[in-house]
Image (spheres, rainbow, N blue to C red):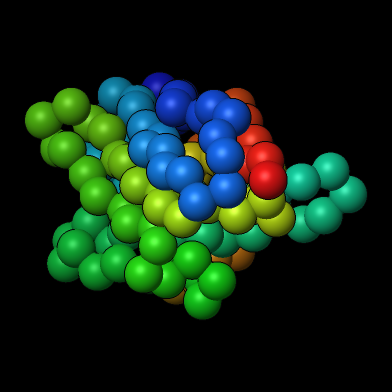
Length: 125
């Protein structure tokens, strides 16, 4: 099983939208939860959105609820993060995480064993 690969990061104006993609062989077949995290220098990695694959349950950080949406395309082994109404404080490197450890909290980095290299999102005012 391959490591996740993120793409779609870009520079946008405040209020703009982006869609991030996370792809890996067997991505949606080998992990019960796929999640997106973000991190800025000097800060902890923050769980943004998680998707439980067996029941399609979505989880979101309170700060992004109703603006960010996590979806998947099983045929392409891809999970997406649609982001709307982006804010400057959301400038960060966004990471995709897989290899979920059952019984752990979806928003904790230690819950995952497979990480991508990240994709940069910059929101300017």
